[in-house]
Amino acid sequence: MKTLIELYDERPIENVLASEVFRPERTVFLCPSDVAQNKTLKESLVRYFKHCGLDTELVFLESSLYHADKLVRQIRTVKETYPDCVVDITGGTDAALFACGSVCAELDIPAFTYSRRNNCFYDIRSAPFAEQLPCAIEHTVEDCFLMAGGALRTGRVDNRVLGQYADCFVPFFRLYLQYRSEWVQAVNYIQSASRTDKGANVPLKISAPYTVKGERGTNVDAPEALLREFEKLGFLRNVSISKENVRFTFRDAQVRAWLRDVGCVLELFVYHECIDAGLFNDVVTSAVVDWEGTTIRDSVSNEIDVMAMRGILPVFISCKTCPITTDALNELAVLRDRFGGKGAKAAIVTTQNCRAITLHRASELGIDVIDLRDLKDVSIKDRLVTLLRTE
Image 1 (cartoon, one colour):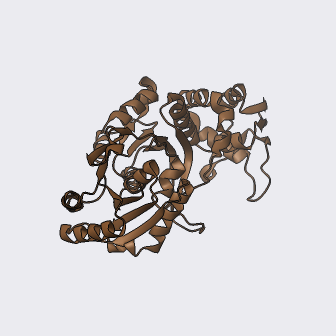
Image 2 (cartoon, rainbow, N blue to C red):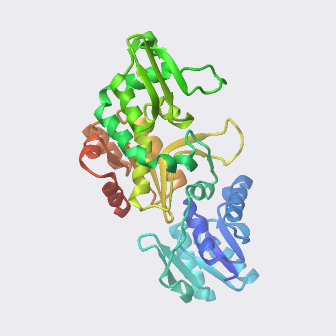
């Protein structure tokens, strides 16, 4: 295939998948004027193709995707310029599909499509090379953001080192469930006991009074039982507790950050379950997406607690140790739709029991909810399997 005609779509995957699979010499995008004249958007697609190792030439032609006659004229022009062209009719509007059907028959242009449900391509007209061709592409989390014009930035967690702690994440979460009512206060104590000035070297050896000043000036006593459990887990060493003083040493700076963060225990557990399920080819926790794909410090960004990829299907997961709010559901839905598009999955995991009204709103937005009852009684792996099966 030398020339591939793509009907530009708001869903990023529809614009790039056929080019990744068939690797044409050039891809011609028929797109609305706001896209054809958007330098930033075009540069982001060029950047993505380069990231994928594709040397495909990209051509952007302005065309109305809502007026069939105009689109037919544009496709005829492309056919005259590139006689060997093939049309991918996976994306685009209904009017665009109508126009393609008409002009492909008239000018004998091959056409094919991709089925998300079956994850394979199909020959629509004179394109036997695409008939029931399985899509073997496996995108990474970074790919998912790049194809939508964004970028993956470093978050709170260095995902490269998480394998060193894999055996700890499940028992860490079991401790959370056992001491859930005391968890916030325990983290508050560790935060106060290990407080340092901004910019100072992070100390691992801690010596603090048995009672410290916590948030809002309240007194917080040392969580003796939890500190000893953290020692058994290997997160703390040399724990010594008296009526006046508490001493311990963090395993390392990474563990120090986790024990000072109320919510990371749930994020690490969900990350572990996604890895352990064997369903995904890429999983990232604390995935920070830069919406514009820039290096500007103040650019718009969001953090996704856990993001997983199964082939070309992205799954966005939010983790909450507090009750789920409507704002949290709306934010997750926006991120899924913006960077995943149609077919992308979203789930929110909470260590609280959800109200019926919350479950209803989540259902309206197409977000799966896993709450405290599920965490106690159902395997997250089973819920992920169910989530991936739903359409």
